[in-house]
Image 1 (cartoon, chains in turn red, cyan):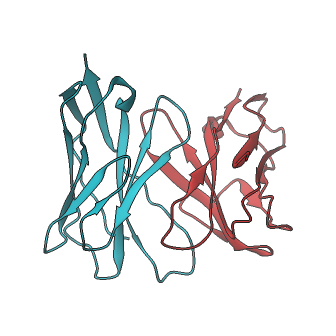
Image 2 (image 1 turned 45 degrees about the vertical axis):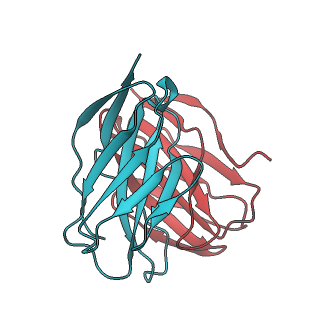
Length: 112
Length: 112
């Protein structure tokens, strides 16, 4: 049982480049979310999804896009990377409200 | 979501009970208290959650005061592997989405 899988684990981008952070879960969970964690800080919600085809913005959505075409996958796109987006990104999923969320191991992104 | 207040750091001796407090004085009647922890820079790990009754599972116990304005997470026999940042989160269940609002957490250090 893989749980929540994030790829890549590490990435270095140049300012202005684009990329997609992948997140996949094999637990058939409806709810999926993306968070970022800056050094010494707690996690901040970027975008979330309550099911395939439904997404919404979290606390810090600017500079990021998401889509949810399948239950399993919830990719996060950076259209034009900026140094301020240097962070660790975590994806999470849960089967329903009021239940535990499962987190991936994170993607460490550096934008130079 | 109600805001939570936690001590920045705590120490505990190995083998002793670790008691981590959390204040959530603005909690609403339908909001659950969740606890997660983050070891090193791994993805957060769910520990326990509760609404008004005390809860216990294989990892920890959660004690919620009668007025629900504060709670305590108890790790009954702390080990070195329990060294982590512990997050107390209050989350409503009638919002149509799974949104965990993380604060800065408590950095718990278990000493040999």
